[in-house]
Length: 400
Image 1 (cartoon, rainbow, N blue to C red):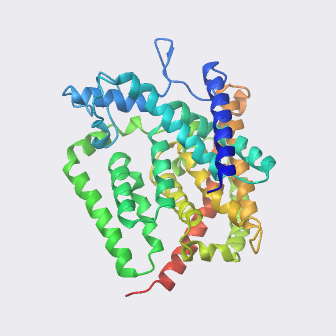
Image 2: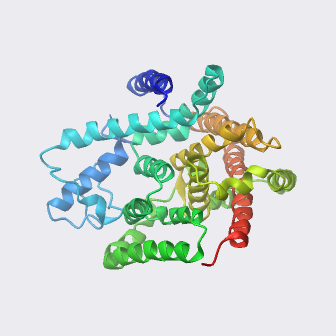
Image 3: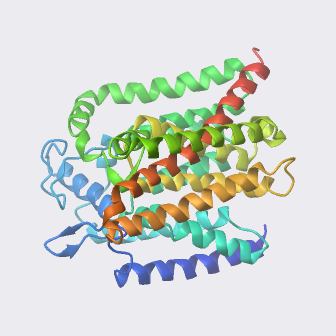
């Protein structure tokens, strides 16, 4: 065990946690991190307390998908029923309100800092600051959003290769927030076609069976869909770029399309000529598994759902593979991906800060579409990589 690494990570976790606490306590991050306020009171960890309060109402016999008076803003519940079975909620409210989200946030911070760990302390510090003090990360921490728990489970899926433990994790988080069903791509590392299909269908059949027995709740969730849809600067989805394009000139759209075309050609050549891409599924190691799980989650969410910006925390799962292959790559693809991700998080934070603080009010629409354009450009290389991996997978997979 590398004790020096874990001592350094612990020190950095304490340091960063302290800085984040100061930012929250002194309200320095608001309104860049959009606060949830009721009766002039700031609701910290709102997304997690939303689950706790809904569980409390459910325990009292309410149909929280229709009537959820225990919740701070009385919003109907929009997640899977499994999250409503928190044990002994009523007698342990302070524990659930504060201890649980703080513990999960600190663990999440520690894990994310481990993604950037390098012996080169200057590079490590720069990368940590760029990503940890970004709007998506701070928003996820401030809201204590359930996506933090899903991100930690993705980390466990990448770290541990026990197939039945993986199936259990995928089922549990898929019936809670639905989109993690895409994580069954982890079975791509099984090169035997029969085994791949067996585990893939087994996992999906169990998930769909659970969802079938909760069909009444699902119907109510879809009826409450407006509550989970985001818009504007806080949106992370393909629908965001389509909506924002309606508000800008044709000239700007043509300019973006031209940049998009050049970008596509450039990165496609880099990806096709990079030897590390083919090894992503041939080598069943932690960095490769985490990269594929994170990429799949990002692409699936980006095109299927309308997401809040905190879902961009899954980009951090790409970092370990990028750093591992940065120095021994046959071309500079990992370095380019790292630059792209860093610019995306820096510019996203800057754009959100300018927009929400109304610094350039005449350019708000242009800033929104710029943010969505950056999202799309960052997703694009991941799509190319997964398409190429799919080709290699079906080309090399063994039937027996």
